[in-house]
Image (tube, helix red, strand yellow):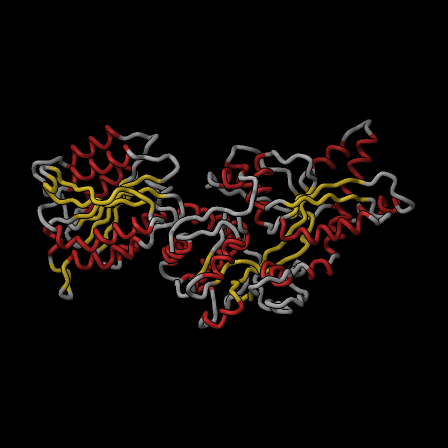
Length: 570
């Protein structure tokens, strides 16, 4: 597979991607149920019983997945002389609506039905990151729910082997596609389930590694993910919802799908009905001397309560659309899903989802990295098992490259002393996207050639300075630009820079507008971790020790997962 985020095929506003790329903070919004449940509706509805006069017009933004339910309710209300409501249903992706709500730019819309309650918290946390006040939103009720499942082409479900589970997804024994969690509520809810599946020793690191693997190819949306799974060489599952499977099977087509319920449980997504302007009622009823405004505010509150009640009661429309009741109960008579749901989990807490999303965002940041590899003569030293250090490094290096997240760009230098004349480093592969198979082939060829390049001493300090200079010269503002240096020893270039001179030069050339962190991995027992730590501190990078071949991949996960907290990572 190529390793990049795939282009989104369905049109959308584009604002959600721009706003959410900047989000690293999270603030919870506490949603409640408004006073219509306490009896606000009764006296005013009675006043309308003899005829509506002017109906209250409401506009609701609805996620496309729930549009059928809202459309059915709108049609019923339009001919209901007791309800006195006209409901205008406008389809819009939940992520897009959340972004506009956070920015305070959603005008002329009274209510919202997203495909998960998490979008309310997402809108609030995004507003905080933008320095804006929390949006005035209030959850009135939950109109439907659907569990998160693993979807597979029905014709290939038997090829999946043992019971599909979150544990198998985490262990990479089940080929899985995760639509972009920045846009998909199902993917976002799936991340905490994946985290729970790797509980135990080194759980955080194993979770990070799992996200990196899933992030190597990120479908922009569900349609793209399903198309990819349908044509994959190996039987592949897609993280999505039971509703999505049911809706696609009900619509017909050439490829029926089956919903597989993970053995650890299926997180439940709840679809809320949300008042986007609750302050309207408060302002209207508080105004003195403006009875008309007060009546308008009351009528709006009653109309919203009427719509909420109608949505809650729309059992037929809900089940025809492939949804269940708010608690996961109900039946669905559509092929590909179970009739009655058993063992559904509660909705994952919004805080856990947003925390997982922050980790995902860090791990899948666009990377532009120059890898600098030690080929000094000491790499010929025995490493045990009849292998040299360079042999075990080769075995681990390509696997480590495979851990790089989607949209990564990578180039390769090697270094020792006097590689090119008096220069300690040699530029072998320019920094280019790993999504290009030719680039990956070039890097693999260099790794294969390393034993034949060994010789000289360890020209560490001069190489560090040259590599940071090159990375800064080719710096790109929309990527994390860094240097990854792997060495098995300590600086041995007596004619080059000293450590103090290197640190002074790094400090003098530092540019806050163009940061270039140096990630240093010491491979083997002879590395100078103290010097590496000083270099890492001077550049805002990190220093790690990998004493065994398998440690290379582990410390790379750590290095990637801490990119946004350096130099103050805990």
